[in-house]
Image 1 (cartoon, rainbow, N blue to C red):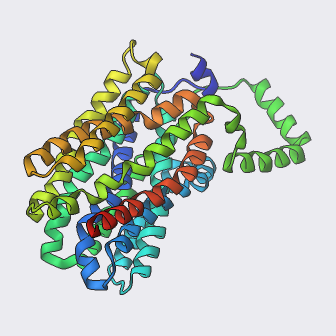
Image 2: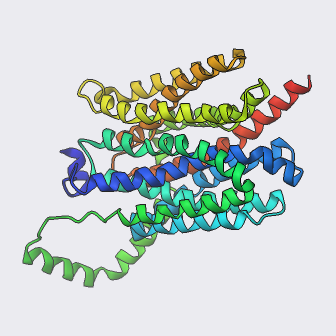
Image 3: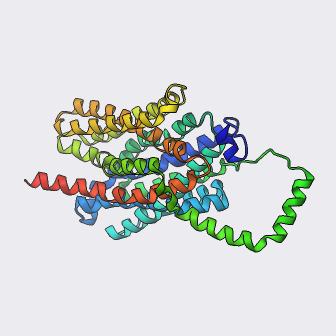
Length: 400
């Protein structure tokens, strides 16, 4: 009940909230799967534009970094206008960025439209979806977060083979055009995110006091509102919280290496002699396993035994995920790559089913929008540097 009092109302924990989860499933699905699934086009883009693979890898890195760096701005916009219009705006930005990028003739052009514009659109989708879930759910919040975050593997499972099919039929330019049209469905997802309405009915005396207070303290409230907006944009008081610091350091280390295996898995398999479609299906296998692991992890985390110890469960998921990647360089055959993809899906799914739930648990629902904005802008740096660093290391090891 403490968290419910903190919100000022009792969350529904169901009802229309499940439609909100469905909308968040779509918007989060596009947010996390698009930068990964774009790797299917990298080889064709590289040959068409005459760029190195390291230069091509910056497309996904810039997109992910923009998605994370836009966190504070997205948090302010969500608190000001609500989740629905922000997700719709993000969907429009994503769709138009992909369509515009399909006409690109240089790598810089793709950096700007796919990386910056598309990444900012994904940022609006991600933060708004996470915030509205925290307003609709409390008791069932781990399950709701798990189902919403399952959008990433579901969409990755579908987009990887779809992108390969589109690439064969229309080339990378036509594929980006079609993908942009698909991403406009985020606007439909945003329409489902109905604002939460408080059902409390204040008495007439309370209403009268409110009117008097607003009349007397108008200028004071305006000044306080400006200060609150500035604090909401970048609240450095979080750095006084030891739990937040530990969470942030662990996440930064994880994010630095989290996406490189996904971005380069298909290329690594092809270099090992695997056929292109089979290599693309490795991402689908990871996504398929991840699809069931995330809601399953949410169910486990919602149990009375795990929820009080959810931070320890999150730590175990990170260790498991890292241990899987240590085995990848030892793999040479396709069957073992499939096994790796399965365990990768399990580890990745557990981490991302819990990553924002743990932040909600640490900071509380009221402080969560500002906290997630601060976390994402700091994480954009390891997100930006991770895949290019991996590409550079791979190039050096290949040359040697």
